[in-house]
Length: 219
Length: 126
Image (cartoon, rainbow over all chains, first blue to last red; front, side, top):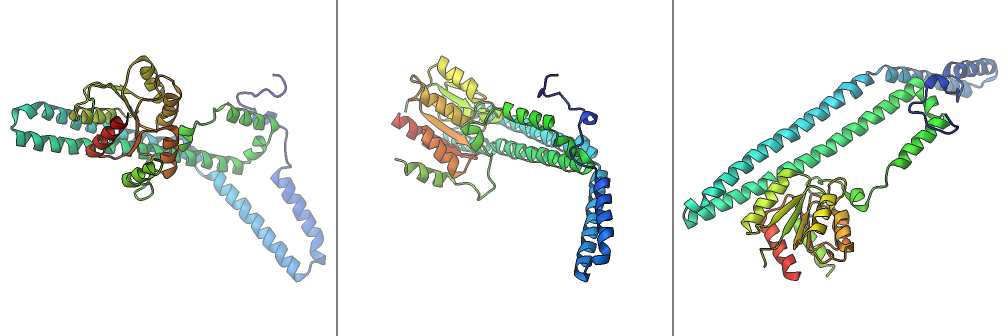
């Protein structure tokens, strides 16, 4: 492999240590503290005690994070949640299409009614069409939730990976080059993609009246 | 208002295409074609003769805004009336669409009356 080439997956064992291991640091700090204790003031001793306690807390938290069942989150919980949400979209789309089938059947019956009946039926069908657009909006909202779940999945995996000591591997120059190359390979978003945010929560976006006024202000 | 024009509706949700098509039918627009993203729409626009485009914004790979820019940059298509019908309801989206040359902008969910009113206005100014 030429220098600088990105392997598909950098072998962790081949990576040079980019920093001393945690045990070595801890041993060195303890040795220094042990040599200092006799000359410390009360305030300095208290500060060192706090630092030691903080070190123990950090070590315990790292162990707890490392022991988290992240495999469950990435292999089961989040895929399962996104599958359920996909099923919601699929079922609502199916139901919406059934409703639209019924509306189209009713529309074909319109000529059999008198003028008043036709107008009433047309009005009701129009309202059903308007209401059925919920499927588009809910589909877009669910897509936003799925994207958020995937972002959480990736952040959790990154935190746990760092707690397990994989940070050293990520600091390896070849790994960094590969990440940068992958980032660079993605095309920059177009204006339309950058501005696409999906439906806003009620009250967060502008209303049709406000849009009309905004457009009129350009004339 | 000439209701014999060809109308292209663009949306990645099939049910939304069907709803808009049915609402257009109620408004007596019978010549309606569909596309599910900007690229497919652009190919149809370049191959056909359309008097109105009604497009969603949030589609992949080509969004409605990017389609609008392509339409306005095309010498043959640039005068085609273009209505954005979208859930994107931030002021910055409306301004970006207006600056790109949108003819009108409808926020989802919308009602049939709003669609009729905007189509009439846009075609009257065409």
